[in-house]
Image (cartoon, rainbow, N blue to C red):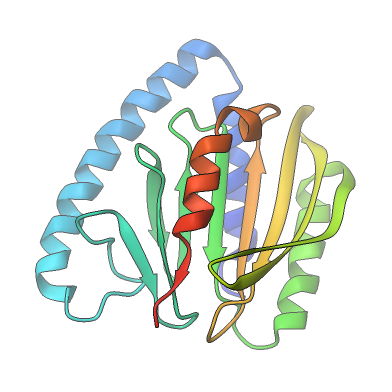
Amino acid sequence: MKNLNSLIAFAVLVLVVAGCSSSSNNNNSSNSSNNNSSNNNNSSNSNSTNSSKPSKDAPADSEGVFHDDNAGIRLQAPKGWKTKLDGEQLVITAPDNSMTMVFWVPEGSFESAIKDLDRQLSRKIKRMKTTTNGSESSTNGMPIYTVAGTGEVDSNNIEWSVDIIKAPKKPTIVLSVAQPGAWDKYSAEIKEFVASIKPTS
């Protein structure tokens, strides 16, 4: 799976940087807002040439909706959250950088992708514990299988989860890494976001 190690490192790094100090966090938020504004401008320019066949490799449309033709789903990032496209992966980050979600459709064997993810998480996250093992839910008719837990990165406590969405065409993996309390803080946005994940057909 391409860039999995670097994506996990990126997600963890965001949380470590965000937790360093409040002043640093404010500066990062300001810089991220500027970068997001630049990305929105780039998205507008790209949409003029790619609007005929949107995919996750292309920018979101004017309403912030991303389409993944490989999985057969569409989703809308929460308002005010930052988005980043890294090849075939979509990274969504909370405004205060306290939570990061990484979406991708595994290449090759799905079982191998899960095993690789487990190995990478175990390497990056210390004192890793599972608090939710195999809970099932659904969104718009698509089953979701969730494993979640806690751990430490550079002596900072974090919370993590792995969601497997049984999309119409191919399963989609969602890796979420968050600072303690972020899930509760953004519970309304997350609920609305999950509801936005829909089949494209």
